[in-house]
Image (tube, rainbow, N blue to C red):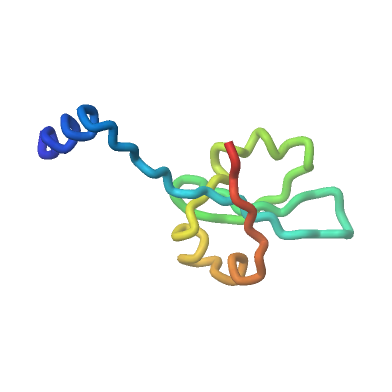
Length: 87
């Protein structure tokens, strides 16, 4: 293992690993009961429309990093369509 000593040090001295923040992107649509959300499917980001009661079913593919969002959808970040995921 390349970083064996790093792992031993971390365990010995109680290092913690900071998790990268995750975000959801949701585009508001006041004219529909559908939510337009950004998801990661097969390694690619795309928008899909889902009913609000279905949002939880997509939690595993809609939690994205800021880097992922800004790579192709920086306008969504700039327009503040992102919401930080809380545990």
